[in-house]
Image 1: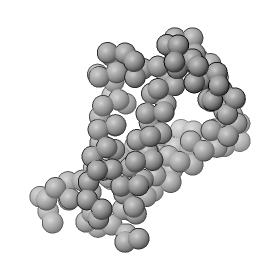
Image 2: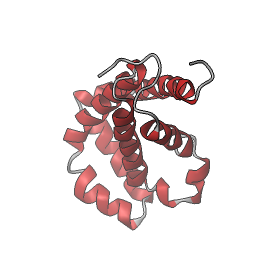
Image 3: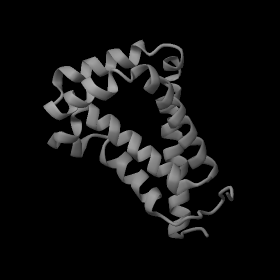
Image 4: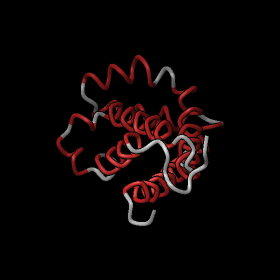
Length: 143
């Protein structure tokens, strides 16, 4: 299927898998210590709009000990799923929700600068394309 849309999406799944796996690798320390995540969340709080501050105060910061374990595991598992082609649409949907959650908490979703952010539209758009694409891509593990 070289040159096909499904083949192109499969290449995109490899690229996004690499991105998610590297993001997870950068958060391995969170598995044993939620302090770095909590520190990062408080840093976002200072410049976040009211809605993001509410979310940080009521969900993210109190839940940091749990999220510090879930985020790297989620990034790792969705990255592996995209890499091997296992349930690509589900993995991409979960990944795009994780990314949007971070962007919402940061407050960057509410800024025009989001449209030029390298972690914004390119990542969200790529994951959305995979989430909306065909159920089976070439060179994928079959569920």
